[in-house]
Image 1 (tube, rainbow, N blue to C red):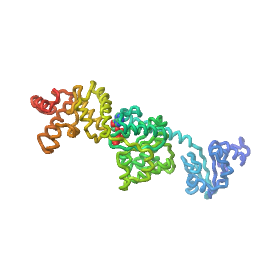
Image 2: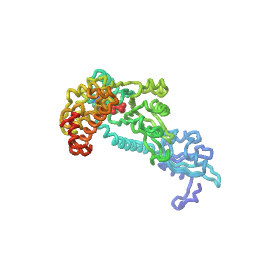
Image 3: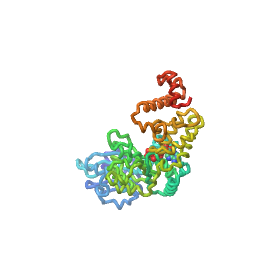
Image 4: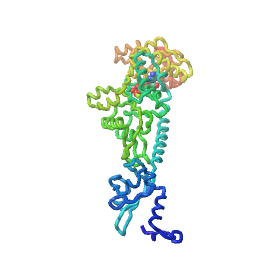
Length: 467
Ligand SMILES: Nc1ncnc2c1ncn2[C@@H]1O[C@H](COP(=O)(O)OP(=O)(O)OP(=O)(O)O)[C@@H](O)[C@H]1O
Ligand SMILES: [Mg+2]
């Protein structure tokens, strides 16, 4: 570099010498690094040691292509073109931002200079900010769904002894950081239990982030789980996006429907669970996370392993503390209490008291509950809307569940093709549904059904619908 090419007033600086130049360079707050044409480091200013924590003497004479083979400065030597922007120093695990430019002697490149600052803290802060933002968006989305869920074991409805055993074990494991695998049929309360485990853990003030492994399309699952860098693929959000694992950092990740994940994704998941680290899509930097894993499925993972559709090693990783939730039909003693809990809520919604007739209690206890607690809840919700009085009767329930236990319907089972019976059922269901839709306003329901007043009242009597 020749001083003559620059605007230096000789009256202020009489002698523009080496020492003066080095003094200036050492007082710059940014790192200044000079390499020669074979990438040997020939100069580093004082800021190098201060900012990067490595003594200058340790790097002088060493080759940058060995210490930091991917650095932007080496690229400048190769291309002869200067560059500006962010870079990541793998050897020191820090993010930097600055510029690099080539040094020419005539037409020949004789080296390169890099001037940069350490922005790891800014990157970290940005990551935290992104995480907070991401969590806020995610929680907003989830809030409605979670509002009605019991928040801890105390609120978990159930007295059945088998359920109690599971809850005791769940409360014990909640205090640890162990991976939990929740098993049970559909609608049995796996998510409720996962939430209770999280809420009773020391991570309770951090987010629990759910991943519905069955609902995310195969081609999106990787970016959903691990996030992506800016410009990772067409259609990617500017600035990249944090994945669920990063959102869950220092909290819990809930891998729901884990049995519905493809084998390819299972392999990727295994690595995260083992190493607690991953790379974002389109990124090379390894992201480390501190997470607690809760997984749930209604699938039989052991038989899936035998069929080759679930990885055995992943299963062992997950199956550290399995929590088995007993289906409702095997803990009939809880049906009444659960029903009362739901009825209290629905009574408030419809604005009057609701009770179950003794016949209905027997019916609920005899029913098979393939949809478990979720089905019980929605059946009672349906009944609470259809029922205009206080007492919920069998005919207030949706038609699809009645054949299983109602005497009235056993006839259908015996005569599955009896047109009169089946049409009758449908007619009754339509009337109930029309009444419910019009808030029990009979004139409006009648109009909607398109039948005469006489036919309407005839049918009400025939089907035993309250007059
Ligand atoms: N012990 C409980 N007390 C009160 N409500 C419960 C209880 N268990 C489950 N529920 C209710 O039952 C419904 C189903 O629960 P949840 O979503 O946890 O089931 P799941 O096992 O995850 O179902 P799926 O396999 O279909 O995902 C929810 O609406 C929840 O509020
Ligand atoms: Mg679920």
